Length: 491
Ligand code: NAP
Image (cartoon, rainbow, N blue to C red; front, side):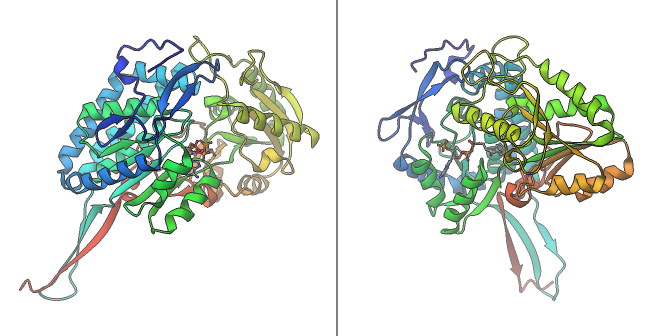
């Protein structure tokens, strides 16, 4: 691989630059390559083979050919392979973190966190592989026995985004492989290196040829083939809501199962009775992780009258103290945005908010580091009329909305087509129940801004998606129920 940036890896074999198809590392059929750049410097990290529709088709065909044997492989064997994959990822966490920060920009500590978080899904589903139980149904008649089997759904296509280039793949591949499905993955073109390194470790862990393939390349070609192929029985997608809708339409032509983890517009509500330290810590964690480029990050901070000024003062101070810089530098808490388009959206949301009456309390402008670095920003006086209230900013901007009553807060929070994550802070147990039940979101954090855990179901309602990842429920999305009615048993 040609690398402009020297990546100091212990195991340089993790730096893969080809497609993984049918257990072999190959160039794309057209011989094209895509640049991978470091968002912190704009420098070239490397070049990776760009696949075509034909490459995707071949990966799907080989996945289909491998499906039968993988589906019949004893659950315990699949479990052991997944466990070996998990262990290798943990062993190589430092190298994987370097690759992730180089192509994505997030601080090295966050990259390590993402890798270890992603690995927990592989560990979890290594266990769950052994628990895909069927059931015996009480018989309605003599001589008959009724039961259900849970079978792998078949070839799975996974399409993943750049903001969590490792964890989003782990969350999909682990339950797919555990259920006995083969999988073809299309990573985001901005961040293919993390995906390919995972592929290398999957090979070393003993994932058989064809069971896990990775095809980088243009969305229309590679994504199009994955969505349209009749051999693919399920699409699992994490990304934007418009692309999710498109994939759902395409998948309808062959009636594929669809799991979608789409955009969010998370409210973070601070009630008068909140513990101020907890509220400020939670809002910082939720808002500024990955420079605000997470689907679960607080997009709207709703603060009750009585605590508003005290919260804004403390929150603004904590925001101003965040260290912005290259993710490889010590102590950095916020890296660059992924690209110029992301930067433009952040600017647009701030300009629109200010035009409609918001005030900038902290930040509000590009960072002196230049490029796509942006100042962590707090706005006050935000209202539902602003673009920032309805659209996911996906950047380090925290607009504070003021409210008076609990009912008003719940109404404001639910006034969105999204329904992924929501947060609120209160010390009143009754309120915790009431508001927890009234919020129309798939994931709700109370007195915390960090909610992810492999044993808990993650996913959205409304236009934030379909299906759940993680937990025992996550396996169901990769299994079909098959009902067996056996007659003539004489019992
Ligand atoms: P995106 O533009 O939807 O892209 C996601 C993936 O879909 C990329 O691999 C992209 O490839 C591919 N893609 C785009 N158009 C496609 C098409 N027509 N057919 C097949 N594949 C296609 O989203 P993003 O900007 O990378 O990610 C940010 C979004 O993801 C945000 O909205 C965020 O909220 C959401 N997200 C949701 C979750 C969740 O769990 N709910 C988690 C993380 C992120 P190309 O780049 O080649 O187009």
